[in-house]
Image 1 (spheres, rainbow, N blue to C red):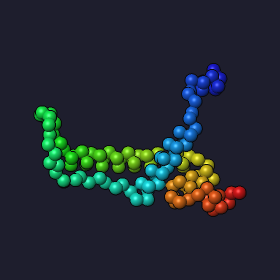
Image 2 (spheres, helix red, strand yellow):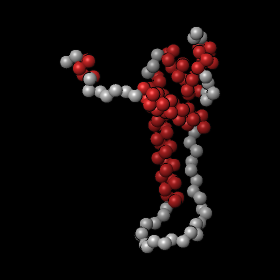
Image 3 (cartoon, rainbow, N blue to C red):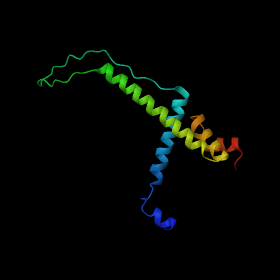
Image 4 (cartoon, helix red, strand yellow):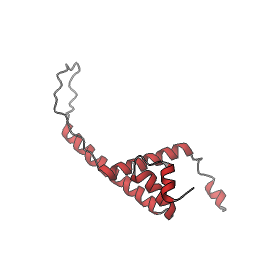
Length: 121
């Protein structure tokens, strides 16, 4: 079977959506590397709103829900950052420089500044 036939089952790639999602992942990894994870805190403000429904037998556990969210979200961010670093490390040296300078080091980096630092015209 030829390579073209093997790849024909793949759907078309939406380039704009793919670029958006990659840039979002790079941005998230940069923020996580620079400032770490900011944990959520629970609010102890009681609500005195009237409840007009019957018993639901559901208990509220805001502290537990907050702790679970913090652990799960930090783990997700750490895994994402590791995957981004691994993917970037597989690129060529020049490509790595461009991605790291443009997306992973400085949030205000522009294409023109990165090109100048790397020596691209």
